[in-house]
Amino acid sequence: MKRSTVLGMLAAVALVAAACGTGASPKPSLDMPSSIGEAEDELNLIIWAGYAERGEVDPAYDWVTPFETETGCKVNTTDMGSSAEGVQLMESGQYDGGSFSGNATDRLMASGTVAPVNVSLLSNYANVFEGLKNKAHNSKDGVAYGVPHGRGPNLLAYNTEVVTEAPTSWDPIWEGGSEYAGKISIYGYSDFIADAAIHLMETTPDLKITNPYQLNQAQFDAAVALLEAQRDNGAVYWASYSDQVSGFAAGDLVIGTTWQFQVNLLQAEGEPVEAVLPDEGSTGWSDTWMIHKDAAHPNCMYLWMNHMMSAEANGQATVWFGEAPTSPQACTYAETLSPGHCDLTHATDEAYYSKIWYWATPRADCADTDAATTCKDQAAWTEAWTSLTGS
Image 1: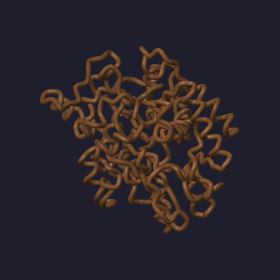
Image 2: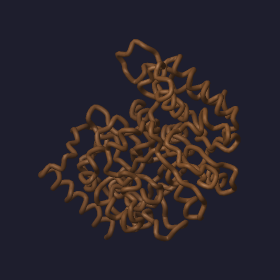
Image 3: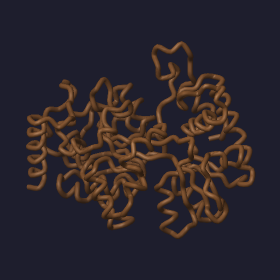
Image 4: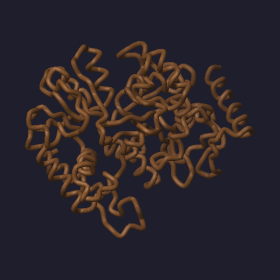
């Protein structure tokens, strides 16, 4: 009965939205469903760790169980360690959908792995902040290819007992990092080359870097040289958030690039750790729930996408992970869990997010098909990173 009720409510809201206009304005396509059918019995998702909690870590954070109860869709999840791994998993065809950052969403759209989404079937889409809709990382040719989950920057974390003056730039992990040798924590994936490029945009303007993900040979070589110097200063690369958390807790790490998620965990344990967004800006993410073009459980996936934009689910999920909610309603709910959360994550501050370079895929055409120059593509970034770190 509950499953039928949910489906009926969604269908009714969709019809009203279509009649009144919600601002979603999906374009007709044979690839998009015109309605949500009967929910299947399960849903197989690829997620970033922490994106599908069921109260096992903290009973206050459970947005999976209510979904399963209301829809009858049993949620199965597989964590990905990187965007590259997420793309590989999605391309296997074994999953209905997942949560992906921009350096995966662009590849999944380009390859045709994911399907366009009829957002008029999703009652909660109308509430999403306009600044999150119809972006290059979640749409193509004016058609949505997913729905927003949350966004956030890569921050500079530091141990306040060692780094006694709050940093205002990224310099302490680069040229200014000699006093923290061997204790600098660095995101252990090739995406971090873009962080080096952002530093060079500030310190070496003669390189004329305009996009940290699209680098010509000279720009790329400069970024790699900067990373080599950082490596030689004893950089410690983290592959999972737990590696970084344990390192800071043990005192083995004192400064480095992080997510708000790790900072929240460390502060909850009483560790002397703070984080800032340096003045020159940062890389970051704006994540999207996408559906596989051949999803075995498409109705459950549509129901899940709508659920993850609800005030309760999005409010919980974004507080849990330490990222910005996607709607005013989710912000209101988030404040009941963590007062000040939407201010902390700058949920409504587009000027703040204008300083964030969302993860994107390096392309040989420099993401500009009319460009005369050639940039280093994803394969080149991966090869350089492997050579740099040995992994």
